[in-house]
Length: 540
Image (cartoon, rainbow, N blue to C red; front, top):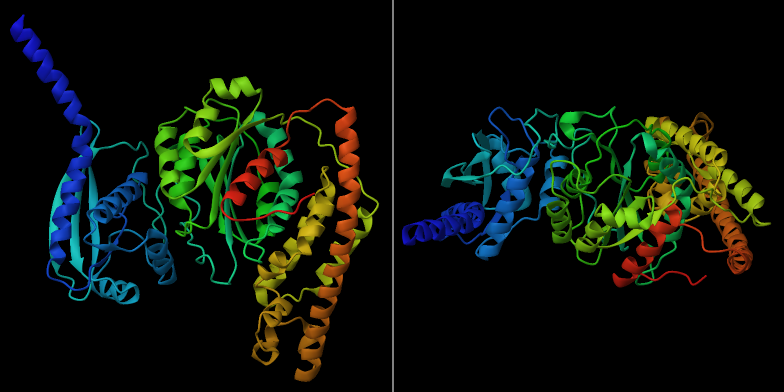
């Protein structure tokens, strides 16, 4: 009995020690690499992605990169370059984010980032769910290996390694490489980043319809926020998941669009979504959005994920707790929106996801008919919104495509219910809309570019025929008209808000409380979280 008891004790001890073994192994590797810069004055280090031999990547490539970065930073002896900055530099240099780089590239990265060394290496999957991590600390100037080591860790990711294009995104992020945004404050403005993750399985037609009709209301509301006397720059990203048309090897997940400020592109992408039944992996799509997007590192940026769906939050190979913890580590709120009854969402752990993610849990009726108050000012606002298009001057080939997209999204908004057309017109009247239109000559000139510096051949034919002074006058006239239309829409909107608020109060007094729609489920927590980050919203 004593021998059996001793054996049991040793077994329990072995199990207890098995969990931290993985973390300790990577920590030991980080300590060994850190010693390679002993005696060096420059302690700056950049940690690259970890590919498999031959350059294939999986989500593990990024996970190992993140973990090693954390362990190196925890030691406090090295100055680690933040991943978003690294991604931005690699994208600008048109390099892959993998560790497969030559001596010339190593030197160039070191020069641009000002780092003394780069951490690079490879992964090699082993039997029984283990992976070997081979890492090297390479001197940026000489290409000499300063330190090297190997660790074995548990393979917590499920996706297989796959070759990718330029950008080195993981297999779970097939559509586009992570795109790092400009740092908050580059334009002297606060920054807001929203990632919207939509279930596009068969049962989600109502959710997608609400997203199409309510997008402009949501962004229009957020664009009206203020912080430090400035309205925010908005960056929105879009993912779809749970669709059989998507690759099973990538978890039925697609990054539709990375972070961007051109909301016409988001609208276009929404109207292009099609539903088809599939497996809905909430944990995996959250993790992919956290690791696959260029989240700003600043703590004063409002960063939030909104995920909507109707299957158990526990589906898929990635534990949602791990994904949500990664979001929390980057200061990202995770908000969950269950399409169904509140209790069903709680039972299937959607509320647990929000609670762990510092966000809010909401439930909606995706089949709900959106009640819209039609105000006397709406028709004129919509007309002025269309008139605003005439103040944009397409510049170059991208300009022609963007102008066509602008008109198509006007028509798309007008074709759906929910007041999308008037909300789109209101957003188009805000500076955030034109400021994101880098395809528009009037915006470029309004931003400080001289008309003489515009390539005449990239302008519309009617402007090409004018002399430089005439061209300057024509563009200034567009800018003046845009300001006049904006001012008129702003005045009409103030009158409209007063009317709509009165009507909504009357409806609320005479009708029982109804289930939320998507816009309400996003805007309510968005207000509370953004206000906690220092933003202020208009009282209506």
